[in-house]
Image (cartoon, rainbow, N blue to C red; front, side, top):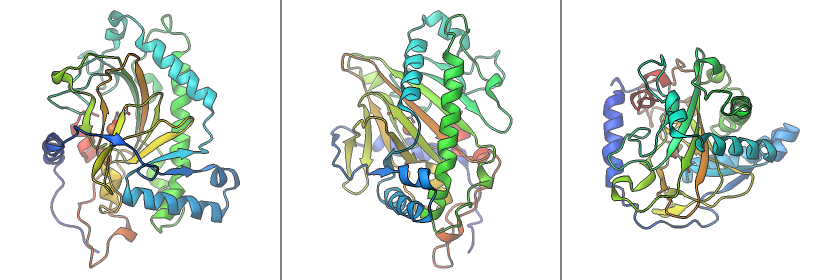
Length: 340
Ligand SMILES: O=C(O)CCC(=O)C(=O)O
Ligand SMILES: [Fe+2]
């Protein structure tokens, strides 16, 4: 086993991904076929914890992560009531007057932590792209040092239930992410607790995005511009169609269906690197919402402890297949360059 002795340059990586993404022809997405985004049912494993149920889920996850990079999960044990209540609060947040939302603007000079708060419509951040992002979002971020109180929140007088519901949901997503770690570990032929230490104080971001119905506009050609996620994995809830994903198997863009009470999960760049490119980090975008109704989506970006150094997972490298990436932590990664 060896690691290349080149330093990882997060700025160069961000530039590379950005210029690559500008070459992608996203003009003709088709409807997804059933195995473009396979479904994994976690109910049996989450209920019994049995070894054979873990083995079944892990094998499905391995195939999905190696071949498609995106899959959908059911049986995740997050209640549909809680999901619906969260969407309702997010709708109410985005219905606030812009003057109120602007008081908690992301990256405003008088707030000590960047990358959290309100991101206005047609922003050029996350991802940073020329033809941008016809969406507005509210983002919270937590890690070993940042707690809920360090985030920007709307005034409780405007939305009395918002903060408690968002905190409850974020907690559920963190629990779900951690419950999935043994499935990832088994899929990679590692001991079931392999990832546990790396995720004691995981860094996560919860993004509550509103894609308003907009007129076609070449300056803002996407709901969210084509990109790959920088995360370990992302767990996305959505209320209507709009997400398009590149099928690595068929080499076409496909429109992801919305399956009730499911989440869509995808691998991000950090897990791709940690697995020495064994797991795909698949390109995707949200289309410009030219329909008549708003779309809402809530991605949860799940990462290891910010300073956990991710050296190539032993089952993913060998003398014949040396590690392609130097070991890095989230804090040294391209995610940080993007201002995440
Ligand atoms: O809203 C969606 O469907 C996708 C959002 C997304 O890709 C992101 O926020 O990274
Ligand atoms: Fe994404």
